[in-house]
Length: 432
Image 1 (tube, rainbow, N blue to C red):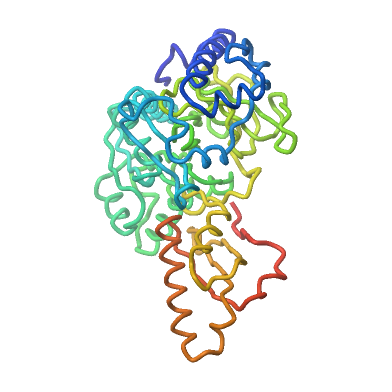
Image 2: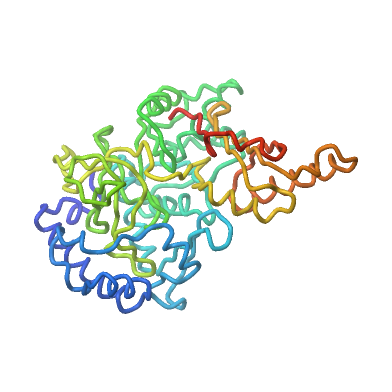
């Protein structure tokens, strides 16, 4: 099944022509409405009408996460606030988080892209969807929610957490589709088994998973645990959210990128030079239809490979392999994107904490677990009042990490110079 056959099966030449037309419109708009783009294009000596073919894209400067942070909160908005109907944001301290905006038309576009992804996974109006993606400032849960309703299916807006209740409703409501991060889905399966529930006896037939890096071994584990077909969905909160790309029922053959709305390139992450389709590299995205927050040549940090060969499903859009690594130091922890610089910024605002820390990420069962080693001042070790002060610092660190980054680390306070000899600031022990 195909949701929008007119655009999802466009011949490649017609699709490329549509991309160039929409790209020209985007460049004109951002040049005249967003100060950052005008300065960047003028500095590069490029006119907004200088791009007339996909090969011309490399003339345009890249946009990075740093530029998004430097323009916090609304500096990259291309429309007045009166035209914006929704705001989402990433985790992080003020000035380091990212803010994403949507016009009414943007939400309609996003809804269609989510609907396309769901139909590609075989969903119909007869399905009941248990949506365990997080609802809130991160756009995952809401993005799929409206797509589910768009195709006429029933949605259970569970969000994440309340695991025992989720298992109960999986039994009582009889959903046929599960949407979640892969790690939380495996956690559901483990908790269900511990409660004596046969998770394979549920009415689930398909799972749509994303929001974190996961491998084919994890896919096998999900399919075995639930007796379902597990499919991958890809999104960038900076661009739109879930619905940029998704697997069709052919499965394990890559995710279709909806190229009528996104132009994708592959570059060498070190040099920035363009790579031919089919070579592994960093994916760079340009939004072609976003009104409120259009991004041009945004370096995603995701390392993948484009698959130009036609798919048997009939969709003409190029596919991308699953993302298994990053070009930067970003960590995905329980669906939240975390950078070591964000941790450092939080710790610098806590009195008594020294500059050095070490972040250790591992798995406890199916879920991510974080240990944070933090150096504190020498005066807290050996003084009569030291223990109480150390406890106060520890509680403050835990609270700020939860408030700003949505993670709850196990904090271990150590003496100064303890971490100086450590080779790595971040140790990720997870095997995806």
